[in-house]
Image (cartoon, rainbow over all chains, first blue to last red; front, side):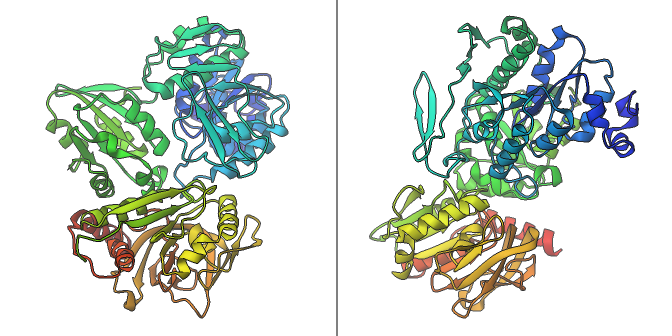
Length: 393
Length: 239
């Protein structure tokens, strides 16, 4: 069989060219999880993989290579692994689902993202619906606090609904089913939504995340306080991970300490030391992601540095800067850099945020006093900074 | 324009629940800010698609949207009738991308089928063969007295202009309407394929809308950051 061996040597690309059915072959006789979302898919893949270690070896694409070539490499690199956890680009979910017949599909959130190259999300969710309808053996674990994800998942034969939260709501004011207005009701206890014009409404959740507490279907509650990754977005990722591994028989009490072992993901959330500065690296690729990065910032007046590029992987269009509410950065020193720093300067000026523009991240780092500095960067800007200060994984 | 403008300019951001895919909010922020710097008060309404269009609005802003939301927005605006009425009364309308198309007689739906628009601009839009994605630069119609426009377009539309509109600009780089021109205007109704926060890089266009709304001249303001951004983008595209 082609592809048995070191995936990084053979390479998924070459493997697929030699054998177009390679992914199907490699997936056969394994229990596979696909993980997809606009944000948090790399992190959640990592969390699930960590929590599945009691089951034995787990194949995974740990470095965000989330298209079929990456899946082939990941599976080929672990020929004896009976389990696989594959991060999957949102657009590729239908194709990868058809080829692998994955046992479990985890779907977390959908929001506007790099519109010059990514698919429109309403369209995307419609494709998920068709793919899941055609894959009745796949069990779906989906965030029912996201109306579009709920719609995308609701054609699946069996679904576990997780109330994992939704903070970015600008893409879900309308009912995905009929286009009518969605009514929201947020209380301390619950966060409900329903269409005013048709039957579509939030399903009853099986798992519920509230603050840092997760309640399982059997009514038992667990604290997420041992989680090493910061912020509510990661509590949400962890809740999904708990529901996924529970599906494979790993109970929350066994999974939780394993989730806590994940401290950084491909450099994200890593703290690096440089000249007495403790620099924490936060990746943020789209408006919803910025909201979550702001959630974990050191409180003002702690300084923050922002770096923005607009290369291919970032999206060449910086319009999304105007969807982010930067006013939250008022009252602290803000350093601005990256190839599109002038775009960001205009945005911050309009938000009445005081800022200083610098040529590169070094200037920002050396300009702040020794101590902590949070850095938020989009994709290629993040990679540049990571390379500069050491590629800690 | 004097700073004792009697009543605030009412800015209506039309249907952000349907027509706001990418930074469209920027246009409201830019107008509010440029008015405030001149001491002109503004009042902004974020108009959801289940609400009535206020016919007393001074400036209406329409953003971009996916196919389905665009069709829904056109249906609701036609049913409501308020935007048409306001424009007839002389209100300023600035529409980008999907919002631009739906101001016309018709546009292309998700299968390319013709969908009726508002008929506020004498234009007809359909679907082109290729998606137009990238920077766009254009020389603006001389009578508008606005410096060249710079923006980002991301659409698959082709727009044919009728007798009763003029093109907003002649394309220097990019696709625009697909015939060498970009956007269209008639009276105070103006549409463009520059998507999202089109006024950010085009403060001259923002001030044109404000002048129309206040009915007179407005003072110059410090545009050094926006000026740097314009310079940088124009240089990146034109060399």
